[in-house]
Length: 129
Image 1 (tube, rainbow, N blue to C red):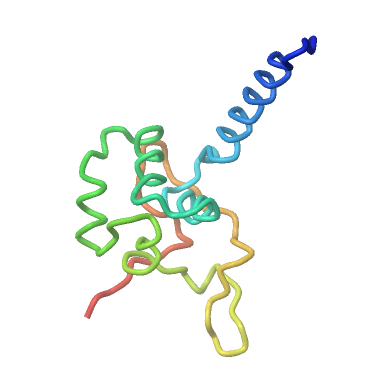
Image 2: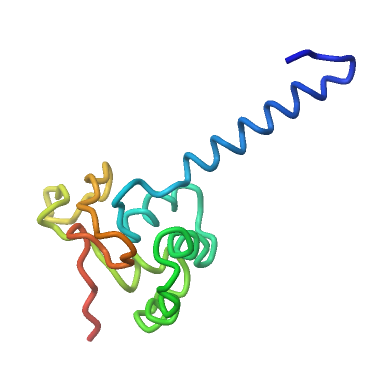
């Protein structure tokens, strides 16, 4: 990589490396469930249903009713999945002295079958009253 007077080859290489890093940092892990993936991606911010849609498009493109199903649970964006749809299963998460679930550090995803948008065993569907 040669650096000319304007530095263009170096800039192009750095931009390429940053794009690749971004893709690798935000890719779902093999067997990772939708809910674990979205929880991990929320570190980069809530983007509507952006993380959910990305997961669906890459791992379960036939799950066309996913947004509608999550909406029926009150999850109209990625962060609402954890406010209205799914909660940590206390069996798999640490708890504080008051019995409240500690979500960090996050346990390793229990995994799901290929093409699934179901949560793994780390998550329980919230019951509405």
